[in-house]
Image (cartoon, rainbow, N blue to C red; front, side, top):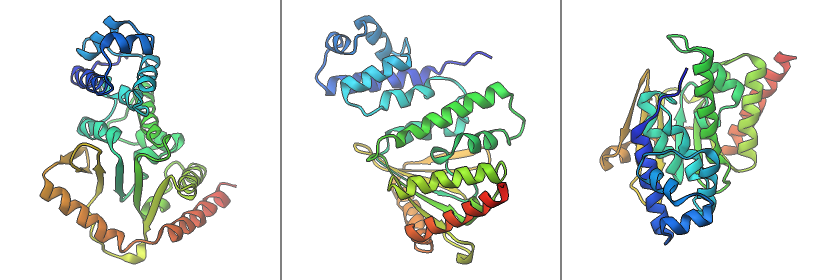
Length: 274
């Protein structure tokens, strides 16, 4: 199956390259020399006529000091790499300096292990071909690379206890997934809070939400339901979403208590897997 091209994202990629090149004070010729790429190729990328390969993107990031931005942006250039309703949120996610998410049922995408993600991506309807599922899996794992930089984005994840208890893929897959969350939480790469069942009803029961802040843009909120998703940019709505998140966070376990619960549940899965 051929991968469709996404002209709008290619144009956006070019605009971002031009803006960051000019901000760095480089002409196309100067950038071409430093990045070991032809000036013509850079001109075509900036105009949205050509797409860079991963090696190009890594060289651009290195020369422009953009911290992996252009390499992370690559998946958006392919059509149908993510659900249509998530495409806009994906671009915001790659630029965010702070991300705070609430997940009611599943581990958030950027925190998923390969085995867990494969199970999730294979569970939808209508069924996906193996090839399509693997393409989606590659994109999901690429999204997680925003965590390669220890300092940015700052990630908080608020998980309903159901996320820990739902055995996606069975005991072994869940044990691996929860151990991954523990590792990220214990090394202080993410901050994790669990809303326990004992909290009962809480302010954010309705569904998944992601709050994002940026260096040079106003914050946004992204809310998602069954085959739907919406980006909210209106300041009053974004503030309301932030307030709801903060209210629910007040009902959650502390970071330390949450890690202890995750560790306990992971051990239960480990014993079950054996």
